[in-house]
Length: 434
Image (cartoon, rainbow, N blue to C red; front, side, top):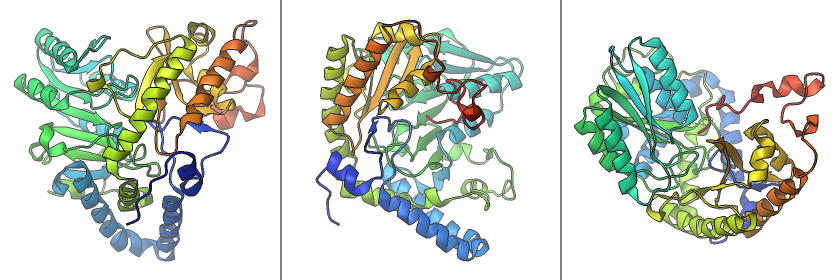
């Protein structure tokens, strides 16, 4: 296998179809898929359509099994405990809604929990009278993992009858890495079912899922592992496999084997999931997780320092041992916060995207923040562009009040384009993308 040694712009030109005018610094949301995987996806699609029925009955299951075995090795999991899913959100929905709750039971989440997971917990509590959703804060600064453990310990001691908790492995917004093994042990001492939300962990850090001791682990493959959309996984501890059911009830719902019950229905497009082996081979050509994370972390650390200095802001106060290697969150200038507080994060992200910058902006407790990601195609010029375009936008918003329709991601109702964009009318996690 030939090792790839050039990253950044050269790799981007050779392996990706990323728009040259876009500084794509948002791989924590969605991957840019390598050209080789797109071509393989098209090849499999053409092969499937030669005899789609037999492909779904024979070739599809065989390749899915090969992909699952390859993924199991990559994430340190027993293949018998693992199944492929559409994404991490499918996994958390399956687990949270699949428990048997009694009056008085509680679901425990933190201020770092992902918005879609919070919504799933709210719906579950709504559908199970007498249950309760409780929150607790893990405040900044986070000086070490001790602060996270202490916050969890306090929440577990304050609230009795906690049935289940969802713990981020790497939090979506704050990019904090949680000490999941210690937290799992602590929660189990209180009789709490532990679900690890690993949507942002797979291929950003090395995993050993069997060693964590959790009850469930969910992950995405369409972020850092650069697979096409609709590729994720669900790991279930053997003690829970007998009764867990997929969200969609179909022919195999009574099968005694967990993985058979969760095999996707044949009319779903499975091609992104059958590309797992190809994506893993690509990652190995790049040097593997450690090498990729080391390169990206070094570049991102310098870039984040440069951005905070240029804007006169700060990074979220997180100790190095609790910081994600390939994504970081920092505060935006207060002027942008004031300008967009009445509009929303989608408007801010769109206005930056128009300027050629793809990042994630959001508001938390009245503050405007920016999450930037660094992956194999990024180089220093991308982050200089982020710096310059945020500064440019900052100058623009110093003027008159911003009430022009041009500042809205979704056009005004009288424009013809509104229907095709109507699914993005607010800042919700409507598409369930971690």
